[in-house]
Amino acid sequence: MVQSQTRYESQELTELLRIMSDPTRLLMAYFLQSKTYCVCEFVEMFEMTQPAISQHIRKLKRMDLITETRKGQWRYFTINDQSPYYSLVQQILNTINPEDTKVKSILLKEKPMEC
Image (tube, rainbow, N blue to C red):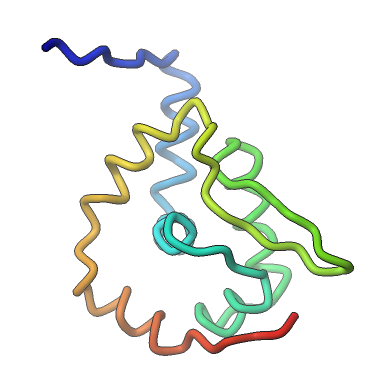
């Protein structure tokens, strides 16, 4: 069976790879593929300011890589499995070793939050 392969315009692929090449955004997407997170959780996990985390979120949203759900004043994010880039992003994220020391150190900072 021949698997069909999605083709992308060079400009859009360049932009996607630029967005995904940032270590913080790459790991955010990695975590968002298995769970929904609030900005405040990422602030704690990545030890970054809320504006910095929001900028990373904005870039991931601009490429349609994540979706946003609002609950009251809070916003929650998850990977967008309807994105035209979903298959390619999944291939990239699946190459991350879950035993990576950076992945593990960030997950150790994860705390249940009631945003």
